Length: 420
Image (cartoon, rainbow, N blue to C red; front, side, top):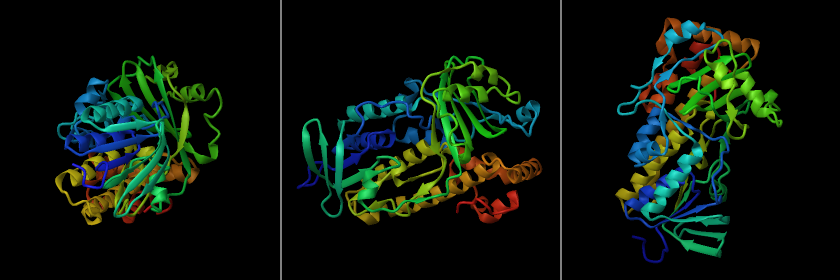
């Protein structure tokens, strides 16, 4: 129940996956929650649609897994990294099942981001969350007496609460108004995405991630001939995929002789926009302040080359939700375990993103030489690639020794491009 002098317990700014999941989690525990969302309707903006096994485990804990599966969730069961440095036969021999990376999780989960947003929001409404959409000009005041003001269809409103949650994405207005600084890694590559349909010739249980020519490609089927494609490419080529024919340009790239069945992708039909995003990390040291806490991208985000956005957000939801539902004490000190765990989690994922970017998404001659060096080492000592498993099993399940500058240098022969 809300304390005397407050209108609700929690105001969540941002009604996407993180805000909605947290709102429902709190409401089911008996807390009064107001959720504010700018958009009146969610649309395909080329967001994450591959959820790592460790993220699926978090999805189960916050109570949304069965709902997502009923709405079309699709598990991938095999991974083969077709690549320019390998013959298809070599890639197939090195690939295999990805169904046992986490207990009780049958592989990564793929589905449209918009569907996930809508399902999470509907679940929050059913749990009793007061959802307001079409919200504008949000102003937050944290501290001892948190308050949120905003404009909506009913005019200007002001609400008192015990806690403000910023779940409003990369450009978070809550973060800016709380003057929480955001650090950003250098930007040297972009990630383009496109949803296609009618690609029935691609195996529906198979994901493929590799490098061919001047792109690092990712193929994630969603079932029924629908596939989300991603392509990492150098920032110097930032004009790519920006014309009216950008989708067709991207499809043509995916017809690769090195990748069996890729002709099915090239024949696919665009089912959404083709859009590029900066492929970089950004982080905050302390994602909270007295009377407020940040989750998801608002609290800093991992380079999307790893596809960790939804998993990071759901871990945030679960950890913050547990703090708020297990104790009446919501003072700043209660969030320190969340702050500490998230800082190390994001540091490890930041390292992993640097590692994978150097391995897969840099395209100069010296980068190719470093890549050949790394692949040769992996063939002899597979454990040197263990850090990549952090993107599947969760960063806490990989030994700390692999998240060091020394390990990066051992693999690549340099510390250049490492984001610590």
